[in-house]
Amino acid sequence: MSKHLLSMAQEQAERSVTPVKAAALLRIARVWTAFDQGEASSAIERGISSSLELPEPDRSIILREAVSLTGTVSPQRALQLASSIGPLASDVTDKLIYDMLRHGHAAEAIDHLCRGDFGKDYPFTAASEAMTYASNEESERKILRAAMNGWLQSSQRELHESAFLRLFELRCKILPQEEALEFLRAAVELIVGEQDRRTTATFGGLDGVKTVSFSSTRECRLFSLAGPLRQLAPELASSLDGQYPQFAVASAQYPHGYHYFLQAPELPEAGDKGIHEAGQPMDYITVGDSWIPVSRDLEGAFQSAFEAAQRLYDKDTADGNVNAAPLECWPSTNGFRNILYKAGRYEGPGAIRHLDRVPKGDIRLFAQIEMVAALAGLPQIGYTSIGPRPSSPSSCAIERAYTHTEPDQLFGSELLGLRCPKCNWTPRSKVLWSCKCGYSWNTFNTRGLCPGCGYQWEITGCFQCGAMSPHLDWYLRQ
Image (cartoon, rainbow, N blue to C red; front, side, top):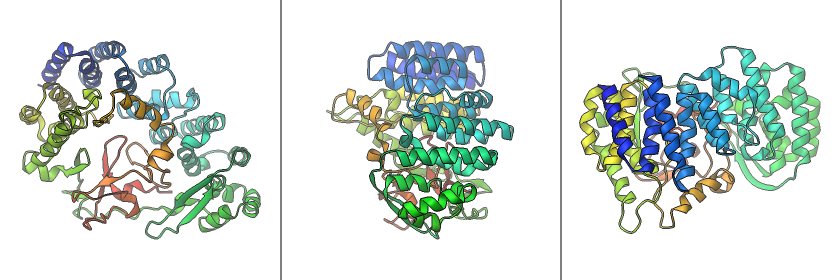
């Protein structure tokens, strides 16, 4: 049945307008890997070809998606595609590596990371995830060395620096001591030699974690190396204490490094609110800003989720402000296919009954693809989401083009000591989550407690991969 549904989806995709055809074929190719690798390879090529026919900005938007989707089918072809469309931002490369890892291509992903051929944007977040897939410590060392070299050679070190320095702090012990020490000295020399600027960085503030603040980017960056410096180069650390008072105060508070103190407490026992049901982690459906427990909505045939998705669809199709982004990227499209994926996972073939509840044929196509992915046992995969805007269609591409060049300005600084357990994305200070009561805030400011209604969220959703994870799992362990 699943294979038949996928074939039907492919036939519909081939008849669709080019933007829908391109995006649908790319996602269909991923699902074909569960049944027929030859069909998967054929579909991915047709999807890429259709993507290249699109005008801008749709072409760039869909090709960004194509890189990681191709990686689920053929890592070699994905790397060829990536090189042909020009330099990629690290978020695209991170997602490529992450999706390769989750679709059985760990060896290829690790090999690519070890080669380190990423130009100015080494995917440090993906490197951290890949280490958990490495079969031996030598592979881990190779990844770390490539990341170290990527950071040293980067012309934009500060852009994604916190991800790398976190990786180095937590993994430097696998290196020979002299090698780690040599890198530390080089890193300090680089940071001290680069221009210092004013900042308003604050770390800590969580329960049991002391707050330290910085007005100097240089001292803030040095603090990210405080743990390894104290352990491997105490004389150098003492010298920095004498020169940089903010560094001295912060590293005295955290002599083993900031991440050392971010030990997540043990997860509650099975049956505690929000985490476990029948011994299994609670799962949620994400529809826009709504996080709906699957266990609750299953009883009502996903009524709450469909209502939330319909509200998004109404916004995407509002008179005078129809969403100009590709349909693949509409928030309502993502909402409906999230529902069908969960339905396929929990209801099996019976989930097909929900397809008629999707209001538009092309959105129904995308939802059907993800339903089959669930039936085939494939992992849920993230999507780009672009909401409707009153400006011209090109603003979609423009906005996404600069979000990865000025992330601190747009989304705030990265929150040290936190990361998505599934994809290692690091949340930022200006990113907001929404409670079921309608209140929006940064959930890590209150450890998941909604200031609006007092509800304690035990699950937190990731804005990069879309996965829901126990809130406590976001806090890094030493």
